[in-house]
Length: 286
Image 1 (cartoon, rainbow, N blue to C red):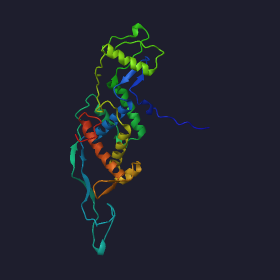
Image 2: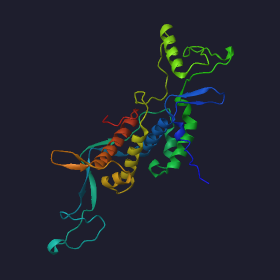
Image 3: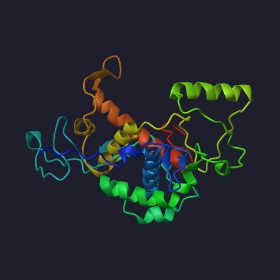
Image 4: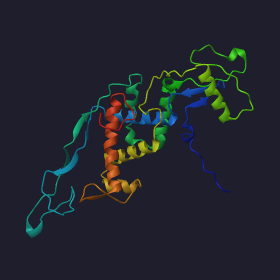
């Protein structure tokens, strides 16, 4: 017997509408999965509040001496170097250069941030824990993302008096393409203009939605950088990020994967800084 693969219920929820208990559509101002990415990085910002993130800096060894070409790392005991000269390997790495951004959330007052603070740090959560905690949060806060949707009026009494709606009747035999064309023509003839929707939570995605795979890679890179001692090269290999070579100057080449990891790591820090100010998902310098 062939075992069927079960599709994750979360993957099926990348939608902006769903059927409610009254069999009417319930609209969302943003895709369900996009709202999850917002929650995930909001939780990350909450976890880092009170800390400082450095953007553009580089880690440098300090606190001792290191022989050129030596592979001795912190914690190893070395008594003598070349020619019997005693030396100490470097003791730690410190951030040098760049700009420091203190993390303080000044927006998103419509959410209970203290409740998010009480959850375990998101970088310590498994994927299933992230999904479960997000589902619980959405049940409490989903109303802030509600948007009006198309209504089905079976009888006259089902038509609601709302200036956001206009009423039409659609023949059942029409196909989707013709329905869309005819509705647009009716709007033009009767001057039924579009009005901006009132949203409690606005994203800076220009209405195009959020590219989840990019945020997933950024989150994974940030997690490995913050919770392990892996190098950028090791992270690019672990996450299967593009290989090959690219020029970073006229005389210097670097693996593409390393460059992508470094870029993603910096972008997440910018995203957190911008998120604290009420902008999501902005990954450039504020």
